[in-house]
Structures are given as structure tokens and as C-alpha cells.
Image (cartoon, rainbow, N blue to C red; front, side):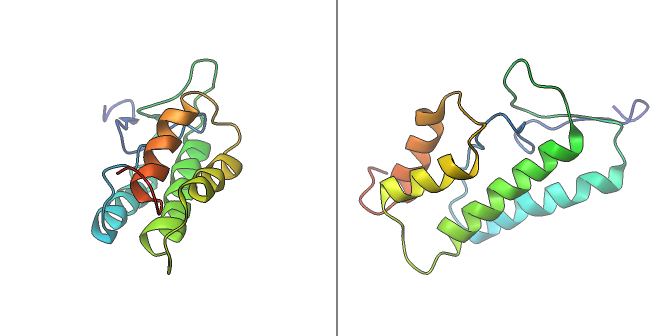
Length: 124
């Protein structure tokens, strides 16, 4: 909404209360495209940013939600996309659980899918 300088982010920005859905980020080009989109948002100078996903009870915070999503994608790049070796399923699950302890809702759904698809010995 240009006049209000509000950006409704859909699946581009996740609130800091939730894990990002990265199941479709199957190659470096897709990861980089998502990160590049995040990098464009501050230039739009929004006064309000509405993440596509956020648990109830959390306040909107554009800077914190952008930082959360970027941190998540950076960790995904480090541990999955650009990792020299494939992590075990449980190891990958624990990386993300420990890095984002505030993300408690649907933990097993998000991290179960992520670790099984991208972890060694997973169930794709």
C-alpha cells in the first residue's frame, strides 16, 4: 500500500516467532533470489512491514522480522545450500532449534520437513 508505506510480505518475510518455510529452496539461485528480495525492502522505506507468518501475541517489528528472516536464510545457506558436507537429520534439526529458540509453534512440522528433506538419511 504505497500511500501508507506498508508492505504486506507474504512468504518473503517471516515474523521472528516462527521458522521459515525453506522446503522449496532447493538450489543456490532460489536462496539468493529470496535474500536479494529481502535486501530490496529497506530501500522502499516502509513505515509498517507485515510478515506473512507470525504467531499471535507478537508485536510487529519490521527491523527485527527482516533480521530474523535474513539470519534464518543465512543459517540455511551455511548448513544446507553451501555446506561442504550434508548434516545428519537430527543435527540439522538441532542447528535450527538452537539458533531460533523463540520459535516454538509448529516446531516439529517446520524442522521435521527441513531436516528430513535436506539432512543425510532423511525421508525427502
